[in-house]
Image (cartoon, rainbow, N blue to C red):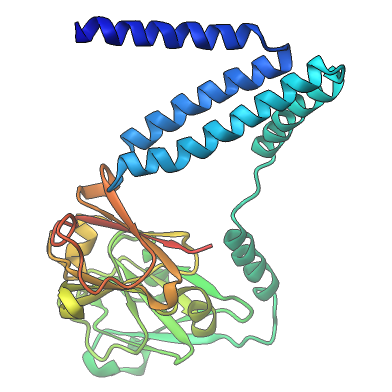
Length: 330
């Protein structure tokens, strides 16, 4: 009996939709069809994406959409039947043309344009001095012979420079023999495990009198940044903590000035000292970042988004975080 009632309701709804559709003029029909497609699309999106309240999301998006489509369809149909069919056609075609143009000529996010503009306008300044970095085969930034130390530079006018493994070897030292590094105070230095400035990394703001075991014989490449440039785009990183209330082991999650997204999967988190499923609180300085927290590795599956400090995560995500993405806030 219930099944038959449901079928009757659906059949009646179907007939109503068809009757309304047949009574509309062509522009109104187009708007009507686009509206139905939009309703179906929003429903599927809301009910399949990761969210703490799928029903609330669906209602918040669907109700305004249905209201807007209904009003637009009514106006278009009234214009047609009132003798202003040309105006009705313009109103339906113009947004479609605008949408196509916006897709074909989509602009980059504003922060990307700003970063690129900053790089282009500052890398040619000749008044920026050459900054030196010295690599030593001995600890405490010493050398038995003055010729043993190797010098690499961040050139004048440049905000950053990648030092690949081959560059280190060409400078005159095997990267596996580096035991201490002395750098200019105006340099922020990033060490990478891979030879092409990718993979596991660590940021250093001071000289290294002795490389720790994590880096002894394992430096693949080095990325140098001017401190002012680095601070402009990467200062005050996200900080995550092992326990609630910002206690326990804490680690910083950086986005380099040349990156738009900082990606930390399970392996990368472990490298910087965060065990799997051991994050209970988080600081997002000045609300300048957007953070995506995933329960699964490699940024797949369900996630939660935050843009402000979390004194203590709720039960849904507390100690269940496996990978993290940090994005610049536009």
